Length: 506
Image (cartoon, rainbow, N blue to C red; front, side, top):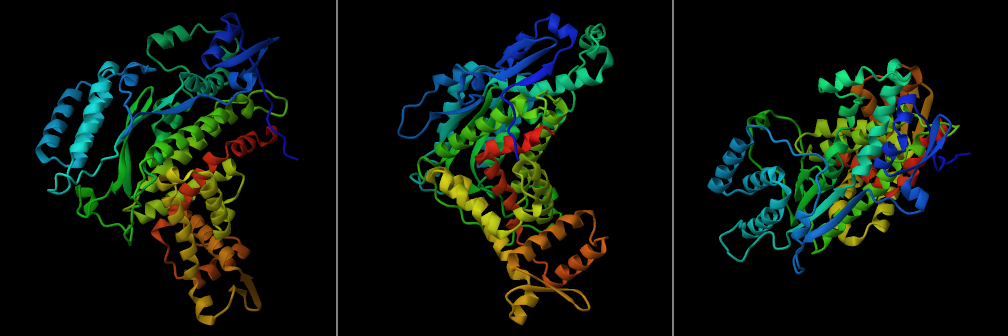
């Protein structure tokens, strides 16, 4: 029987931390803390107050037909000081000259992105307004009335500083566990380390650095229309400024944009039609994404999720969950933007599905069945509001369509007119599989082949050989998009994620 995680976690405190008031540390993470001998019982404030978390939030700054709230930008607060590289001024000037010289959309956006990243808070309202005006002045034709971005708008996705403190606890406690001196109460070596600008609590922090500016978690949203682009963002330490274009524009160019693109790799083999976006599609999609991230990080930032069967906090369990989730988001973004590279997209799909197993509680084989993918898509279509679905669901639908097309590759079954795929596993052994099951198993063969084709175990070898014989090997380019489908499902079901990550206290 599956048991849920406790409401609070018991966390053992080293003597030096008890002396310096651990409650102050936990208060930064917006935790309620109660002392218990040499430990603390820690609970999120939202759990204590029986309220939903308020860690990630979105708000609209400018939208056509409504009064803009430009001054809200000046009231944002940076979590860390913006440190600009010495060469920034020169780079900005080169981008400005290029934008003004060519007048292409990519040059305009590239210049404005960097400028809005570099400016101080007080100058954001003016420059953001200028960017929206610049988008409204873009023309793709000579017709002055044919403005491509009449519905362009601006949104802010904010991240509460308490969330970063919550996630950092895993690295702090792992250092304490692994540092005998520190865990034993001796902090004498810390002063020297800090004076040398050493990062003391840095355990694997580079593997989940995407939480610092949160760009890793907004990127799949921005790439959701692949290969179309519907929004661009500017990353700041308070979160992101998301400028939505109000429409899809092609994110690719028919001609090579850089020399690397002259290296030939297989890519998309058919054109993608972009749906027309309604006026509130961007607003709805951004709010849905922020709301779901808020609930997901309510799980990832709650240390009670990462306790053992006795209710004691296990930082290694916490860290591994953070690394896994960030890996899923990062690699899903990579497969979404790999429109020109089928091999990269397919390989990324398999690593995403592998990572999703422990977060969704379903194995790779099941996720590769058309029946499960179709059911998952139906659940999302029922739950996501229609305006948001205009942006969020086209790629997921293409992924399911590609999975359905996979079944057509079983050419022997089609030519023989059999309902099932009849696999000969030996001279006198025939194993019949439904087309759905056979396609899933064939995808798993391809997943296993990332280490090289050919199974080693006799039973698996016979099955692998038969599947390779029955399918023509033509894999739709969009098959990788089922990884994005299941990322949406993870966002849709944060409490299931919590249950999977708790693992009955294991």
